[in-house]
Length: 149
Image (cartoon, rainbow, N blue to C red; front, side, top):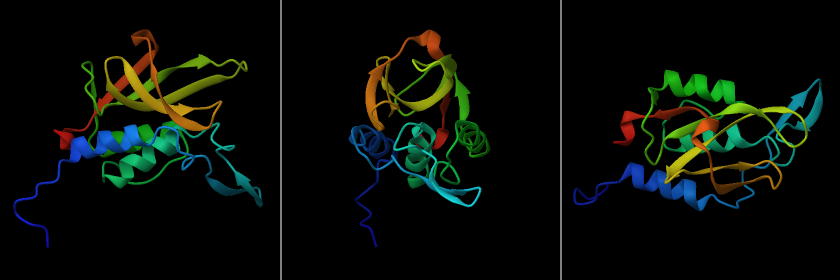
């Protein structure tokens, strides 16, 4: 049993986990049977942004399950009490507007806001989470969960 003098700080631990994930290969692979064939649907991290975000959120009981797509992750965010906000704060989820990537593909993206116009999200070229700045014009929505206080 935990000591009554120890009070877990969920938000601080959550943000530390996000920041400490930078550079990890942990989210590179998500295997599924696709038409009977064993397939890494994340393509060694190329498509891992939703997997990364949902995996972390599931670990903190902030959504129901791990996802491989942004659409299913956002649906789970909404059903798990996350609300859109115009005022981002560290810990918010960022959903970026769809944009053409450098390969000519229309691509949506999701990550974590960590403050000062910085986010942690999966780098599709390197296949690992990284810290990056973003332009506010690239953001579709921020989501905040009141459980984070």
